[in-house]
Image (cartoon, rainbow, N blue to C red; front, side, top):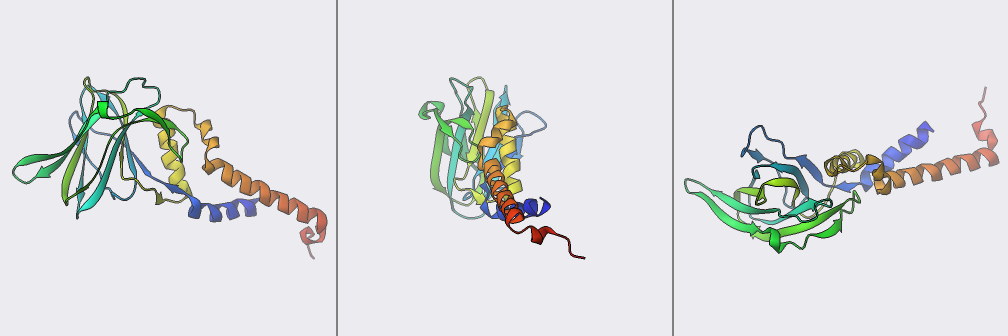
Length: 216
């Protein structure tokens, strides 16, 4: 059985694709949270507004295609989440890039393919931006409610355990019982592999019992 477990571990890392999940964690209201991003790889920032907007900041070293989307939890029946993307200018404040208005989002249910969790898709932005420092603010008229800010649109090859941690973080954020992760490929693929390998071992044991006899 130990052999089967090790074999599964060797197979899994090359077949796990995921994103990075980061919780928006700040020490005081209106504090800007710095993040490091690769705009070609998906990063999910989870947060909850508590009376004030929340903002992240990142720097692009060169011109790049930027994808930004706001999602709400499926339990929020009438989301009013929106936001704004700005570029920080030296000595001159900021320059607005785009506004993400909650009325522009369809807020239709979307199943996230890796975790199998359902979220509501809201406003989004796709465009090419110059190098520089950018800030993205998420807000509502009252500044209350949970949100997901998704930057980038491709999943990177993260490895099995990094994928597991990211999906587990999403389940915790969505307040969904983690037993639901059994629906994901993170569970049923390794379980299937182990069952197939276990069946092979049993078959060999019955047909060639001499292979399992200790030799003195």
